[in-house]
Length: 244
Image 1 (cartoon, one colour):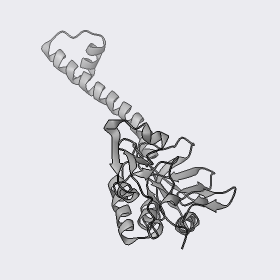
Image 2 (tube, one colour):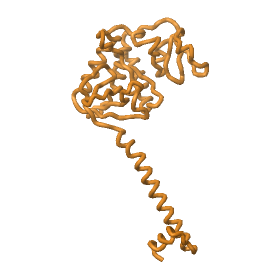
Image 3 (tube, one colour):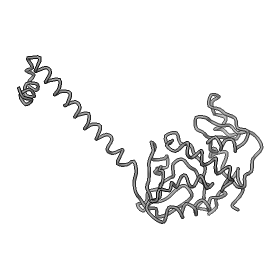
Image 4 (tube, one colour):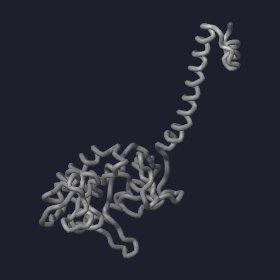
C-alpha cells in the first residue's frame, strides 16, 4: 500500500491493520509537526521583524530622546539624562551639554533601533537601544561620558550589566555629571524591587516594604549599585553642580 492509499484510509477512518496503524501514526506526526511549524512561524515572524529597525532622527529634544522623521518619539532604554524644561528653556546641570552631545551623535546618518521586552513607555514613546551605522552604541556612550545615568527598567535588562559597568567607570573618572559632585548629608532609602532611591521623608520611600528596603549612606553608593533617584523627591541637580 502506498502513502496515498494509507492517507485515504486514515481520513476515512478505515484503519484495519498494524501496517495501517503504523502508517497512520507517521502521517499524524507529520501533520501535527507541520501545524506546529506554521503556528510558530506566524507567532514569531512579527517579533523578529520588529526586533530592529533603521531610521533617521530629525530633532533632538534632550540627551535621552529623539524625534524620528516620521514623527515618532524614541526614548533611549535603560538611561536617563538631565531634564530640559522647553517652556522655560531651563535645564538641570548638564542638560544642555547632554543634548548637544546627543545631537552630534545621531543627526549625521541612519540609526538602528534595537528593542527589548518593553517597547513603549507610559507616555507612548518608543523604548529602544540606539546604534549608529558604524556600530557605536548611543545609550552606552552617553553613560560612559557622564551625560546620562543608568535607569533600571524591569522588562529591559539586555544591557543591564554593561550600563552599570560603564557608569562606574564614568564615576571613577569623574566625567560629566560625576565631575563636580556634591553630597547631601544623610541616608537614602533604596527599593531593591524598583532600583530607585529616596530621601527618608519621601512618601514613596516610606511606602517601601521592609523586605524591599536597603539603606545607602550616600547617593554615590546608590548610583554605584545601579539605583537611580526617585523623580519625586530627588533629581540629578541634587548631586552635581551646574555646567562647567
